[in-house]
Length: 424
Image 1 (cartoon, one colour):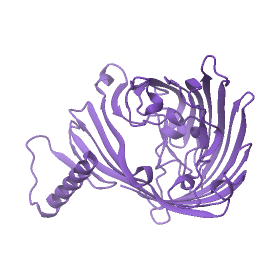
Image 2 (tube, rainbow, N blue to C red; image 1 turned 180 degrees about the horizontal axis):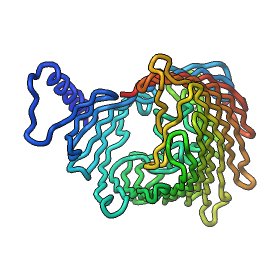
Image 3 (cartoon, rainbow, N blue to C red; image 1 turned 90 degrees about the vertical axis):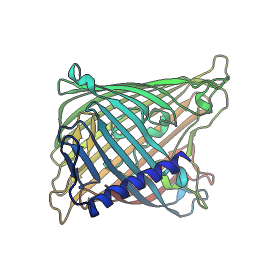
Image 4 (cartoon, helix red, strand yellow; image 1 turned 90 degrees about the horizontal axis):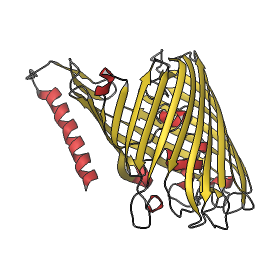
């Protein structure tokens, strides 16, 4: 019901604004003058920057074609679907208070859900470069996750994030995060989160907590001139969880609704009630010069067995290396606030910008005497940034696994993924 009311409110607000622009004569205000921008959504703000709001969003329409371990019987399958369809409303009030309310209408096989609902206080910047965010939002862990899905170079983020999917997932819970920059070269964040779901509750139904820490040193932090080093740590309180580790290996369509769809590849099977500790470490590196960039991340997850359990401790590790080059000469954007890459803005508005990308992912899971699985994924892609709103992407993905596979016993497979993205 809330989702329907929110969608109705957003549509009504947009209709009123459009109607006002179309039929109003002179627009007046009872205070500071306002500025209206329509490039990249609708943005209205006072000239003194005390108040403002923006209506925007993104639509990502994907088509995946895949076979081998990516499908249930190994035969070729395909799936068209909306990866994201997000309406975003954000703004500022009294200069120091920022808010973001985003709904994804394509989440979880077509159902809608909150992508973000948060309020951030930035008034501390007068004394220290800090921002305090409260609400529902993604925890901060990793360079590629910090980068918006709009501007990552591949269609899907690296498979290493699947090894510990909870480190970046709000999981319908709530959180508080403090972040900030200093010296023009340092960024850091620390957050505490209550995650919903039975795996994150104790025997009495009380939500367990967890925290994320991220620190980045970036002595070069501007588009086309980036040197980035980062470390991450996340821990969650869990009781009697199954310790399962699984991955889509960079092909989202394999788990969408339809025939011949394969569930995620199991790297460590779930064993109910045998584990009670969960933590993850991460490391980040990136370098960019002009149109060329290289980035790499490492993730290690420790899953602790319960005292007296017949099972042993589990460890899941993974790393990736990504190379990207913009043929038309543009540099990838970069922001120290959030320590993340940003958009490529085409210089030529007629031909747009063309980017080539290659990424290698290596993941594995181990438990002495029980689990020893490995996976390797190669992703080759091309992106066309037609303009600042439209992006067309194509990826070829080839994967090989050891000691695991699909229901038919396949241990390798390939896929072609296509995306049409519109951002406003």
